[in-house]
Image 1 (cartoon, rainbow, N blue to C red):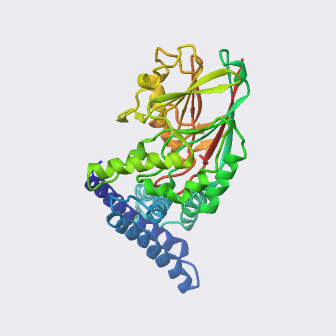
Image 2 (cartoon, rainbow, N blue to C red):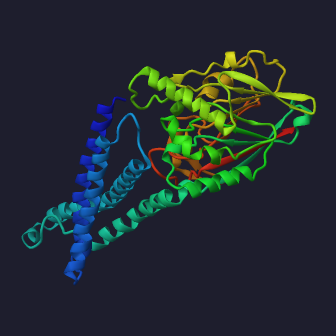
Image 3 (cartoon, helix red, strand yellow):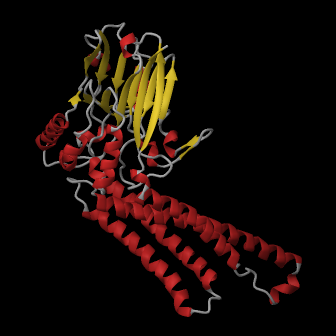
Length: 419
């Protein structure tokens, strides 16, 4: 999407937000009309307008202020996130108010025709009842408090997801072998170094045999990871640390002074992988050996359905024995869906990320939902087809919306077992 189109879309959203403000303001006037303290009543109604319109103006201001050569900073993401919370809260408030207004419209119409003599004494459109505004406030409080929690706490509420996978052809030496996976660090979005360190410490505490990172180290530029090189570099595993690139790592979402500058950024990012102690796999494979037996670890560049298809699975498989047990690192789960699961060569396990689980959703024992499911067939957790497994990590970091609610940041621990 061109920057101009992006800006126009958000201008329309901001205009809608202002219309919602008018509706909410009227609802708050109904709520406070019988309050005796006039100053307090004005503080609530006009105070709301000042805060809400201020957020909208700030949002519009940052659209023009951040340079495309840098991308969004944590400050920009905070303003965007506050606007999102404000907008969604207003939608819920207005929805309840609107339903109440429809009810009083029908009440007025029915009353007009059933008892036409009363029309001289009563207004055609009855006044809004206070309890409707009270209900609107109550309903709107749920998304407001939930999303605000996601911004303040949820985005750093790291969870360990454990999965044990059984394979008939797993070499015996690897029975019980453990892998810790991180994905989608998005270091350019971090705004709390101490909280990030807690997540790193949790990953280290798993003491897995192998560590893998499945792409999107940064939002756009290589410099974003530099303050965290020493911290993420603390993660070590006996059988090594390996990584791949994600779609954001190529710098395709911001403007560069030249193609040479963009290429230099990617080269610098590759050097950062090395500084972290990660072996970056670029359409290639390595053998992991234990007690004289081996498995093949394969890493491809990003391959996403509809965009950035640099991944070459056939090239990455060159030299790999067809009978070898294979673990593939591929950032985008659509690669597994479109290419890997039906490939002539059996890839036993694919590890991906990319979706973030939309950073919002519901996951319970019997129910899972996230808006990202309407875009991705496999968006979080484990998928299996004909004993070819895919695991999609929910992401360590966050992007755009500076928060998470229901889909918490993930550290994955996989245990391989011989069936």
